[in-house]
Structure formats: structure tokens, C-alpha cells
Amino acid sequence: MGVLYLLGIDATTGQLTREAQRVTLTGVQGNIQAADWVTADSVAFLAKDGIDQQTLYLVHREGGPARAVHRFTSEQQFSGIGIAPADRWAAYVAPASDGFFQVFRVSLDGGAPTQITADPTDKTQPAVSRDGSTVAFTVFSYQTQFWMFGGG
Image (cartoon, one colour):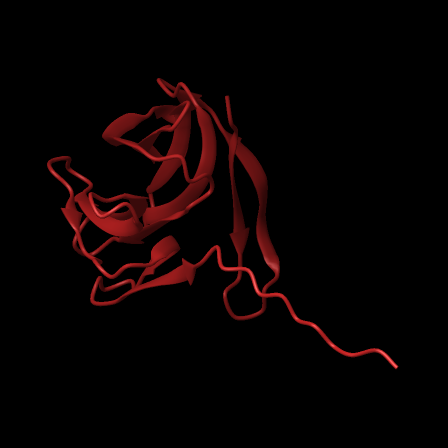
């Protein structure tokens, strides 16, 4: 099982303000792949629960039982999550019906996810603005380029 640590960093100076402390979790089956703050007291994290199975969880910053918010299938590892704390939703990446990895959003209270991207590219690493108005993500491709040059 993965391990979650929290530490404090001063946003202005980058200086450590709180030493790393392990967050003891219960109810988590998989390895933790990504985490983000929801509020000052709660953290959301993504765990790989099995082959191509992932779960988004919420837990109190001091640890304890983690609550599963949403389970989904995706073979993409370490795809990240983005949290919109004001509106209480998370962005994550999963395969869509078009065969591409698209960005989805799901309420942190649970419920059905909504696909928010639909272009024919694969995405990863969603990041959500603190007010939830903007979602950024990385687009990647599997294209290979060969360059030839004349030696002489």
C-alpha cells in the first residue's frame, strides 16, 4: 500500500514550515499516486487499486478512514488529479468512449462523472484553479519522428 505524507512549505519563501508527517490511512487498498488539498483539514488522493483500477479518496489531514469518492478504470498510471475546493469537485483522466484519455470531473460528494474534454488527443495531469473556473492539462502523443542528416 502507498504512503501519504504531509509537510508545510511557505508559499512565498519555499522554506519548510512543517516537517513531513506520515498520514495513517485505513480503508485504502492500493498504492497512492497523487494527492491534493481540498480544505485546510482534508486531502483528496488517487490510489491504484488493481490492474487498471483506480479510486479517488478523501481523508482528514490527520489520517483515519479514507472515504472512496469514485472508482474508475484506467491503465494510465500517475495521471494526477486536480481539485476545485470551492465547488468540491475533482478532475481526473480516464479513457473515454472515443478511445482517448480525456479529462472528467466528479463531485467530491460522489455521483456520476462528467466528461469535460472531447478532442482527439490523450491527456494527463489535470490542474484546477482554486476557484474551479479553469482546468489545465498536459496533452501527449505517441508520434515518433526520425531525423536524417548527411554526414560528410
